[in-house]
Amino acid sequence: MSSLNSPPTGTLHALHDRWPQAKSVDDFRANLAAVHARIAAACQRAGRDPAGVRLLPVSKTKPEDTLRLAYAAGCRMLGENKPQEAHRKWEGMRDLTDLQWSVIGHLQTNKAKLVAQCASEFQALDSLRVAEALDRRLQAEGRALDVFVQVNTSDEDSKYGLPPAEVAAFLRELPAFSAQRVKGLMTLAMFSAEAERVRACFVQLRELRDRLRNDLPSGLTLDQLSMGMSGDFEIAIEEGATVVRVGQAIFGARATPDSHYWPGGAQEEA
Ligand SMILES: *Cc1c(COP(=O)(O)O)cnc(C)c1O
Image 1 (cartoon, rainbow, N blue to C red):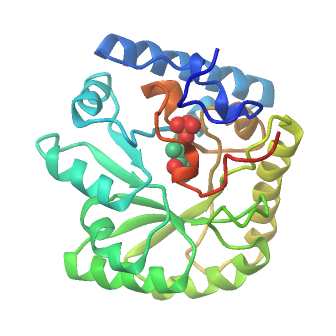
Image 2 (image 1 turned 120 degrees about the vertical axis):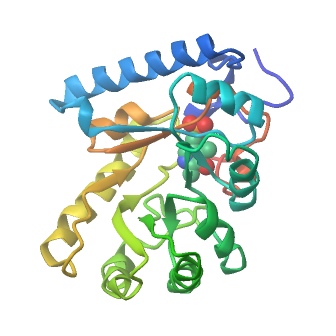
């Protein structure tokens, strides 16, 4: 089966027929339970405690009505890729006072104010210019933000994130930005049907974190590893993920191709 909206076949992320649209609170309850069960099974294989893995539901492209169903099913933090979309939804849903927002996509300095206003967490920090702009805006808002440093582990130009070799020097600069609390590292794996190539990206992030831990600026622990999406979160958990960012397996397939979020990213790798 295929449709006009399907990305090229042959990627783990292309199996859209697996992900029907969630249209009721019960659909969300069922999908969340199924993902939690898969997280628990992956943890068991890896000898890990499931309490050490946080599920971040990713709601990008879905309308507010749908996000409210997810909230009713228990979601209290939602991930959005685009700062404008996160800010728009935050404004429209401020009545849900305990709902928090995690921005997981690339940020340009001219959008830093949006993230400083609406987000509790930002997972795609990858430049000092953005760290500076964010800190200025956060100070002005009187807010603080949990941040993850995004690393490019797939060596694809289409993916955002710092090259692994630049992360140590980058981390040394971050204590200067006092409104940002550095929690860990984030990555997107290569889009490939070959599980071992995907796994290699996750292994690389974990090993980088372990090396960096030997020489961290004081106050920084780098405990968290955000890695794994609908198509690959079980592999990520086996390799040490503490946060998995799952959209389609909870909300249903997206019409928007992934190339909209990381140009070129979902195109190759047959
Ligand atoms: C959309 C997105 C995800 C989730 O992808 P799914 O295939 O919907 O699970 C994870 N991380 C980032 C950065 C994203 O933009």
